[in-house]
Length: 246
Image (cartoon, rainbow, N blue to C red; front, side, top):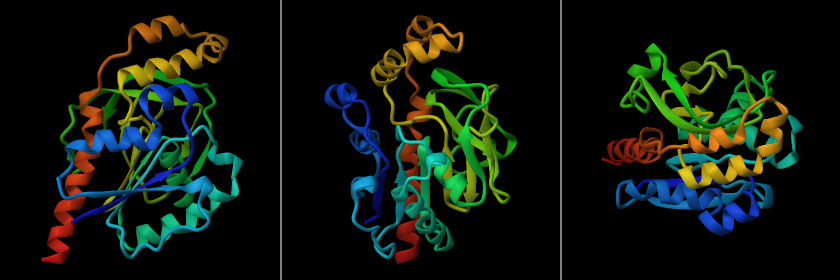
């Protein structure tokens, strides 16, 4: 029975959480297609008194956040050595947005504000050659659409990381940090309705950097390939767990 832990790294906007669910709820819904015996628990990292032992965890998913990795909040810094230990134990990991940036920072890279500004909306992402061969991302089309909402990014990938996906705005849309440790800048858990709600909140910030938020809202579309990464991750964890316990 694979055991997944969702590490919640912050709260969504109040109206988004009310109307669509907070980050952990969106992850749980996207994982509905995971193997039926998958157990999913949630750790609210900013409010947790302590981090759990890794002995009973088969896979870790790290959510997005409205916090910034470069602000080095104590709860966020405490996650870094925990993630390093998880990687050393070869525990499967998938970091999303903030989780992507936090994993990169924990493993020797640099995460901070993107010099070109915010990237928001439904955008095209392209797999690298390594991404096309990857066990998690390799089932995706070479070019696929994904929902994005970030001001910070991975500026420098960790020395041992492999770039799996990129686009014109961000050369580090997805990284692989080890045999079973991945991270993505985009949001596979977002639905089109959630993406539109985020764009509505970001209207002024997008206008300030010369973008048209109404056009971005109109261009929001479903992203089934990106969304499929979450149950695919759970399937890989399930398969590995069964082999380890056979």
